[in-house]
Length: 98
Image 1 (cartoon, rainbow, N blue to C red):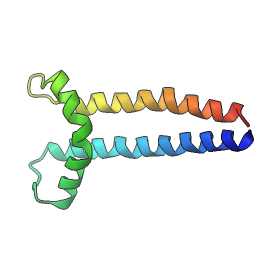
Image 2 (spheres, rainbow, N blue to C red):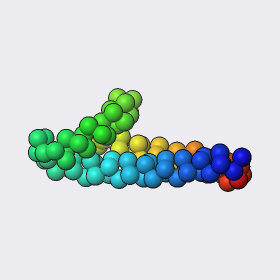
Image 3 (cartoon, rainbow, N blue to C red):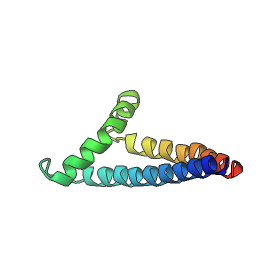
Image 4 (cartoon, rainbow, N blue to C red):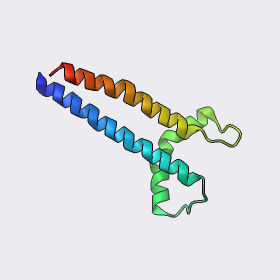
C-alpha cells in the first residue's frame, strides 16, 4: 500500500509545483498588461494563450470594476485555495497510506 501512498504524495507535489508556476505566469501576464505590449511578441502571445482560458470566464462573471481587471487576483486566490485544500489533502492522504 505504500507504493500507492508514494504515488499520491508525488502527484500532490507535482500539482503543487504546476499550480505555483501557473500562478507566476498569471502574475507575469498581469504585469505585462500594465504596459502597452507588442501583440506579436512571442512571449506576450504565449502568456495570453496560457492565461486567457482561465481569466476569461472570471472576467465574464465578475466584469471590470471601474477600469480594474480583478480576474488575475481572483485566479490567484483560487490557485492558493486549491494548493491549501486539495494539494494538502492529497499529501496527507499519501502520507497516511505509507
